[in-house]
Length: 77
Image 1: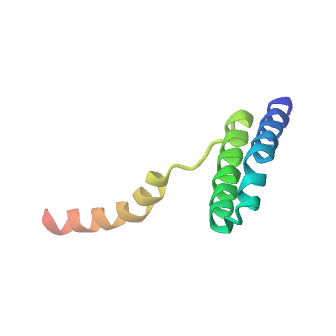
Image 2 (image 1 turned 120 degrees about the vertical axis):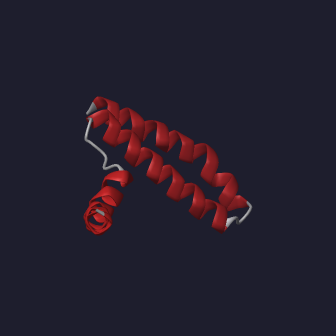
Image 3 (image 1 turned 45 degrees about the horizontal axis):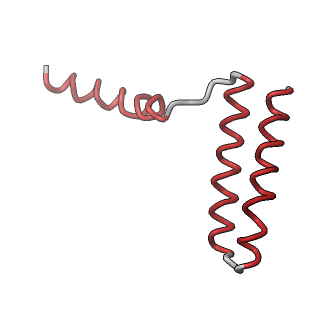
């Protein structure tokens, strides 16, 4: 819990330094991309500190293509 709070505090400090210049220069697209990437990074960091398992995309690909490969293998025998 304390680690997650620390991550949020660091993300807040990053926002304090990065967001005002972007708003001052009216860089809306850059601010949007910055916000999305920061949110994604903070979410992943919190998941890793809580030690939740994050699904591997390869697991989904294997789930989809394994039955297909077994059918094709059956035809080739």
